[in-house]
Image (cartoon, rainbow, N blue to C red; front, side, top):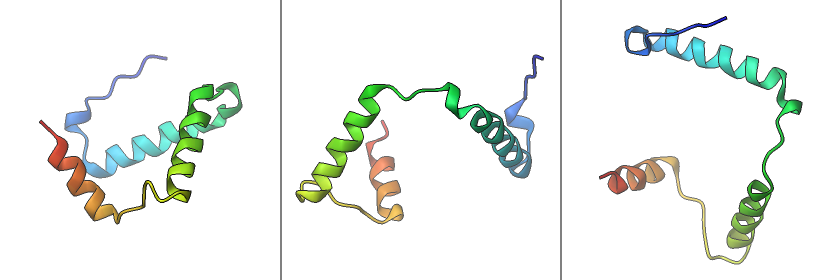
Length: 72
């Protein structure tokens, strides 16, 4: 089946519903997908950075501001 959505024409509600349906479909076969080894490496590095104080959590509003400031 080949389905193409004109995303720009969907309402916000339709977009969210489509995302939810995609997620349900993707997670139905999650055992078929193995995360690459480097994912575990990155998670361990980040956990270590938090534990040693080299990194910290920031409120979501601040994180969004930081991301926006980095956009070209």
